[in-house]
Length: 246
Image 1: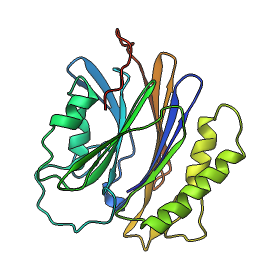
Image 2: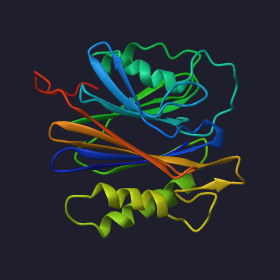
Image 3: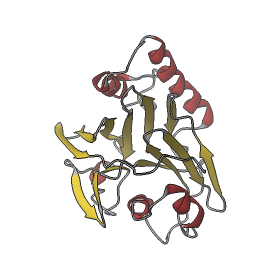
Image 4: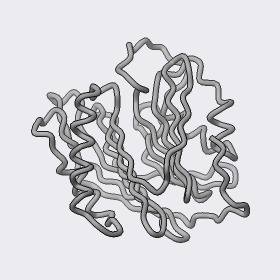
């Protein structure tokens, strides 16, 4: 997995995430979970119990893609599921502390994306080293999983997103992003935004986080059974000004 787009808006941002996975691992509803002083919203993996996109009352949103820069050799057993690592993140007060200190030894390579109002960052773990990059929160961004899409296909898929942006001036609409994630195409069913590789791996769901003034909402579309779920949480304001230290 997967395909991810980020778009800043006047009031926050829109994060949309297509999950490419074995069909048996797809839930059809959003989980709500309290951890410490925080409240998390996320779809839960039906096998490993982890998540791939989470938004929270604390104002933090994060998501995960399999692989770092290139397709790696899958060599289980791994110490901890990457989806559980994503949930572990929300037990840390500040993202930079997690990025620097969380024990990643024995974890399969991944790309971790973090967003908060006025902040965006990327952590890539290649199995040996961690690579932290601060992103411009006021610019659109695109990612897709290195384990499923080689570099040349990643470029083709991002071009679909960039061309779509050229036709959409003004503040983006969440529904139009969902339509893009349903219909974005490179002319190949195995590599389109909603992909299918012989039923072994396919796009099982679309998740979308919309951060607006005071609220974070999560919309979940189960593409296998046609079910939908939407929940929102009041985003807690930070007492201090945001400082980027990644």
